[in-house]
Amino acid sequence: MFDLASFIEAAGYAGVTAIIFAETGLFFGFFLPGDSLLFTAGILASQGFFNIWLLSALTTTAAIVGDSVGYWTGAKAGPLIFTRPDSFWFSQERVRVAERFFGRFGPISIVVARFLPVVRTFVPVIAGVAGMRYRTFFVYNVVGAFLWAFGIPVLGYYAGNAIPGIERYLIPIVALIVLSSLIPLGYEVLKRRMRG
Image 1 (cartoon, one colour):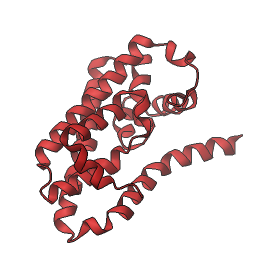
Image 2 (cartoon, rainbow, N blue to C red):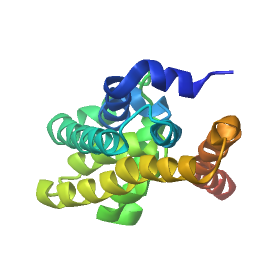
Image 3 (cartoon, rainbow, N blue to C red):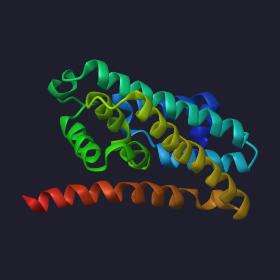
């Protein structure tokens, strides 16, 4: 089984920061393990591997910059995104899911999408395509980044300090995080299929 903790230790600050940027700012980043990576990095910080405040500052900055890159990609590329053919890294269905999500929740979707894998990669792009004012987008971007990229590592840090030997339970904790983050997406897919 993939050892996320060892991977994060090897990646260090630069690797964790780059992954958070890629997941939020680049199309191919949709498959990266943002939630579990942030939480695990926080646990490692509780064991002295990272400085939690430096880690959280870097991941928050990466998330803000990543979403901004996604927004400007959508604003500049516009309709080209909707005509791009499907490939291993890109899917029109993922864009449509993000578009429906953005249409349903409006600006608050920038915050909520942070906690939804795949959707968090594409919602900023849709916001750019839709012509949301950048100032409005940026405010929601910063709030979402703070809650997600700052909040989750800090949560992992305090959990690591509060629960002795938490590293022994890391695999089931990460599995639970991944599963819980996929539930809303699964619900949306099931609902669409039931509608026919």
